[in-house]
Length: 524
Image 1 (cartoon, rainbow, N blue to C red):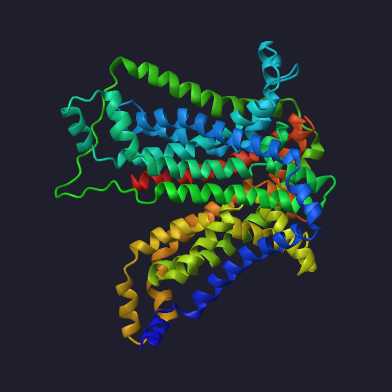
Image 2: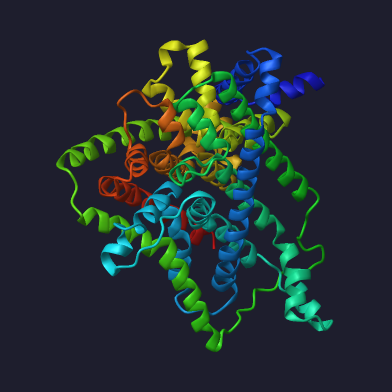
C-alpha cells in the first residue's frame, strides 16, 4: 500500500521526464569535465593543482570577491535605507536609479572606464584632464561593484520593508541608542537579505570574465580563458574549471550554513507594526549628494563615455557588423528563452504541486546550472560535445542549449510565483469533469501562468543578450554577438568601434531593468 501510494504521488511523465532531462543535461558535462581533469597521469595532475600560480589566482579571486562585497555593501545599504525608511523626496525615481546600473554589464562598465582615461580619453578630450586608465585589481573592483550593487540593494530594500519595527521600539524603550539598535536589532534581522544579495554578487565575481580580462587582472576565470585561447592545455584548463566549481560550491555551502536555523517571524499574536518613516529634514541634501554621486559614477559617466566615442565617428563597416551582431544575438537568445521556459515549467510545477525529495533534487539541478561559473560550464560543454556528440561542437544549437540551462533559474522564479497564486482546486474540478491531467492543466492552470511565462522568457532573453563567456567559447565560427564585439574592440582599445555595440546592449539591458523594476513595485 505504501509503495502504491507513493507511485500515485509521482507527477505525470510529461512533467517528470523534462525535469529529469534537465538534471542529466546539467550534470553530464560536469562529469566529463572531471574525466578530462583526471585524464593525465597523477604526477602531472599533482603538479598542475599545487603550482604556485594557482595560489596567486585563488588569492586574486578571493581578494576581488571580498573587495566587491565590501564596496557593494557601502553602496547598497544606505541606498536601501534611504528608499525604504526615510521620507526622501522622489523615492520611486531614486529607487529606479538604484536599479539602473544593472543595465550596464560589468564588461561595458570596464569599457567605459577605460575609454574615460588616457591621453585620448573622454576626460582628456572634453576637459583636458588626463588620468591613468584604470586597470588591475582596482579597475575590476570598480567596474564589477558598480554593476552588481543593485542586487544587494534590492534584497536589503525588501528586507527593510518587511521588518517588524516593534522590536526596534522595544529596544529603544530599554534605553539603547540608535546605533546600538542598528547593530543589535536591525542588522541581525537583515541577515537573510544580506546573504541572498551577497550570494548573487559572490557567484558573479567568481565567474566574471569580461571585466577582469579588460582590466588585465588574473582571476581563475581569466586564467581559464587564457588557457583556452592560447595554449589550451585541456587537462590544466579542466583543473582550473574544477577549482572554480569548488570555490562556487564552498560559497553555496557557506550560505546554506549561515541561513540554517535563522527565523525572524513573529511568534506572538497581533500584527506587525508598519515601518516608521524617518524625516530627514536638512539631512536630505546629504542624501541627495550621495544618490547623485552614485548615479554619476554608475550611470551618467558610462553613458556619456559611450556617446562620446560614438560621436568620434565609426567606420561604415562597423555599422554593417552591428546589424549582423544584433541578428546573431537575437537568433541565439530568443530560442534559448523558449527552451528555458520549456524546461522551467515542468520543474516549477512538480516542485509545487508534487513536493518530494525527488522534486527538490531536480529543482536544485536547475540552480546548479546558474551557479556554475559560465566559463566552467562552457568548457564542460566543449569537452562533452567533442567526446559524445561531436556534430554539436561549435553549433548554434549547443549555444542555445547552454544559454537555456545557465539561465533556467531566472525563468523559474516568475513561473513559481504564478503557480503559487494559481489555486489547484480549479485543476481538480476540471479532472472531475472527465478531463485528463494534462488537458485539465492546459485549460485551467496554464492560462494563469502566462504572465509568469512571459516575464521568465524576457529575463532569459535579455540575460542571454548580455552573456559574454558562454558566447565566446561556444558560439559557431563567425557568429559574433553584441557582447563579443564590445569585448573584442575594447580589448584592442578601439573604443569608437565598440561604442555602437555597447549602446545596443544598453538598450536591451534597460528593458531588463524595466521588467525587474516593474516586478519590484508590483510586490511592494
